[in-house]
Length: 186
Ligand code: URA
Image 1 (cartoon, helix red, strand yellow):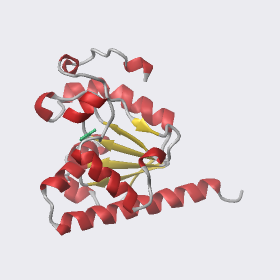
Image 2: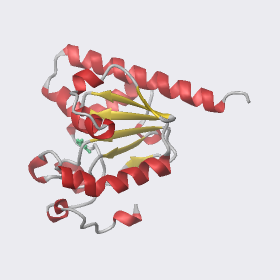
Image 3: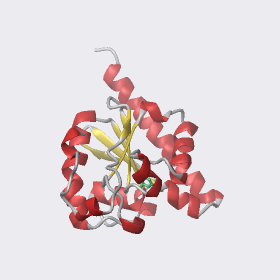
Image 4: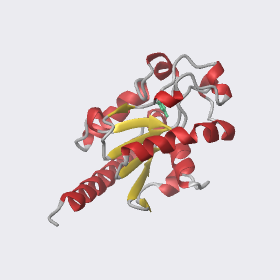
């Protein structure tokens, strides 16, 4: 986290108020990855503290996770102007920090929120509707994609929420399975 202090690697530094590195337990077995900080996050310096963040908190709670026991971050750590999508050069500039976080935290499960996080992490152009609903193993980690809570707020019907809940339950099952595997009798 110290390494990102005062970062000027990309143009997002010009408009940001604070760098939103991440929050939660640095020893967590679940890492939640969103897109980029929004207005509220930019002011508070913490990820997912606005309306989408409140929904994320409830989504995590629905399968028994508190925010404190997981680690939450984003693909890019500074707010894009007007909440536009991060651009390829910005993602590339920020990637070493994300890789550093993954290396330090060593999660067992990654919950990727929305098209942007899922496509960036899986290096694919497939839409979230096609990627979600199953696990994507990568080495000893599994990635579980689901809808972004901001998308669920924009599309409040029960159908997307039901699918998101299925994904959360899948992530929870994988998390429990991998934890019991790693702590089981030797
Ligand atoms: N949306 C994101 O993708 N990340 C945040 O931190 C807040 C909203």
